[in-house]
View 1 (cartoon, one colour):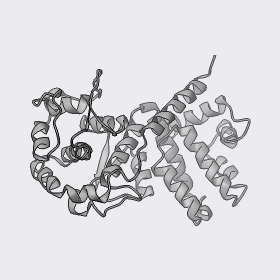
View 2 (tube, rainbow, N blue to C red; view 1 turned 60 degrees about the horizontal axis):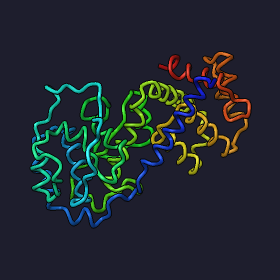
View 3 (cartoon, rainbow, N blue to C red; view 1 turned 135 degrees about the vertical axis):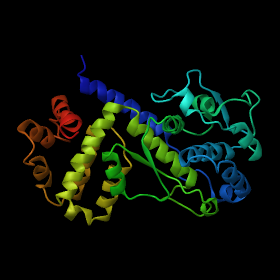
View 4 (spheres, helix red, strand yellow; view 1 turned 90 degrees about the vertical axis):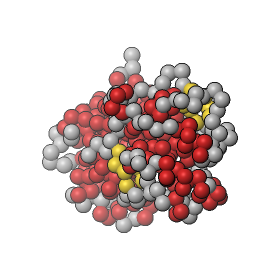
Length: 318
């Protein structure tokens, strides 16, 4: 019989496979898309001016997703609607006619979709071509207040995201000045690509409460190492800094996988062979935890080691 961790590993692999399928090219919309639709963006801005920032962001994202394939965006409806834990049909419903918005922004409305569909239902069942389900589900769960996302008008640093994750938050970067969208890039990503990227990360961070607890514990573990200046000599390396920044801000995965990745990027720098031992021998760690941490990425790393580490991440550090 498989142990609990081996079963979890199988689930993690399935999750990883899903993430691979959910990836989309960084440059999702080219410069021409943002230049050619400036008039539509102006209409969108006017029609959403009375909405809250959160709902404006959601409507913007959905509209741009459909506008990029304005005559062929509809991919049907889900047989089982997306679900959320916090939605209140009375308090949550947004009284917004998305059909009217699409009409005024020249987005084709499919004949099989009722024109009087309410916004809540649209968001819970509609599938949009080329948009990862994890992104749409992230949008829906954010709308329903399931996901705690902070909206910023700039791209935060890796350290800012690390701190937000420790506080049980993720981030959305949303600057509605559409005149800058043709030239604006977030790394290699355009405006819409970066928004969808943020929603996918929200889904991977929040969708499994237990995994999220373990991730938060891992991030606290990393923050203490960082604050204790145990990585100072590594962070001067451009390659290490890049990989480390990605790990703490852009890699929402199983906590054991995160820890293995952290150990691997330390090892490949080959600065000080005692660094990992020093990390593992923090005064607050008991003998079983130290032994488990020392075994990471070695042939003798076991399910029992993983259980000890997960208990530490999920319970001791939270």
